[in-house]
Length: 305
Image (cartoon, rainbow, N blue to C red; front, side):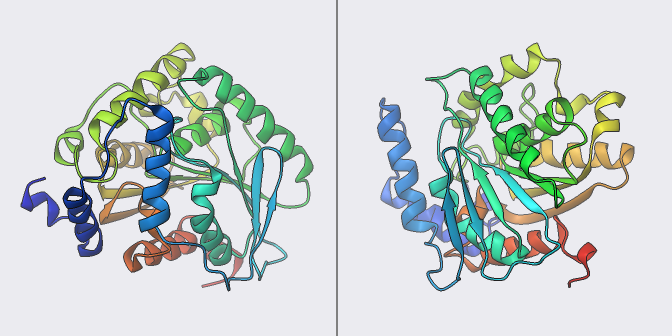
C-alpha cells in the first residue's frame, strides 16, 4: 500500500494496517472454514472485547441475539440489526462488542440476526429466511418504533427489506458503509483495494454471489425508481473515506438526498471499512460509534443531546 494512501487513514488504523502487513495476516487458505475462523480471530484480537462493566444484558434466541443496555429509555426504538461480512463471513457473536456499545449509546435494545451463509446456501435462501424472521419479529414489536440497521452487505439487505419486503414497517433505516453498487467498480476500488480491511478481491467474490439475486429482482440501489423512493423511510447513511465502497456510498448519498431531502449522511474521511468492529479498542472507532448513535439514528429527535 503506497505511503500516500496509508497517510489517509487515521493513525490508529494506519498502525494496525502496518501491523497486519508485517504480521502477514493470513489470506485465503483454500478452506472457507479456516478463512472464516481467521477473520473472526483477527477481530477478536484487534477489535477489542465487550466492556464487562457496561451492565448490558444479552438474550440469545434461536435466530438472533438481543442486547439490552443497563439504561434503556422508555420511548427508545427497537433496533433490528443485519451484520456485514459479504454474506460469507462473520456472525452476531463477532459483532457483540459493537452491538453492546451501540445499545448503550442509544439506550435502546439492539437485536441482531444471523443468516445462512454463501456459498453453502444461495442468496435467495438466505434473504428469504432472514426476511421471514425479521417479519415475524416485527409483528411482536407493536408498542414502539422499529429501526432497521446494517453494515456493509447488511446495509444493502436492510435497504432491500425496507423497500421491497416490509415497506412501511420501519421508522428509520441506518446504512453503515453499505454495499450499494453491484455493477461498477469506482475509483475507490483502486485507491483502497488492498490493505484497508476490505480488499477489492474479497468484494469481487461477494459481488459474484449478490449481483444475480438483486438483478433478477430489478433492485439497483444506484438507480432506484420513484416507487422505491416513495417507500423509503427516514434514512441515514454512514460512509468511510478509506473504503473500497466509499465512492458508491458518496454517490448514493448525493443522489438520494437530491430526491429525498430528509436523508442524513455522516462521513468519516480517515476511517476504513468495518471500523465499527474496532470500537472496543481504537479510540477513533469508538468516538465514531458515539457520533453515529447521536446523529444517524438520531437521538436528538427524542430530546437528548
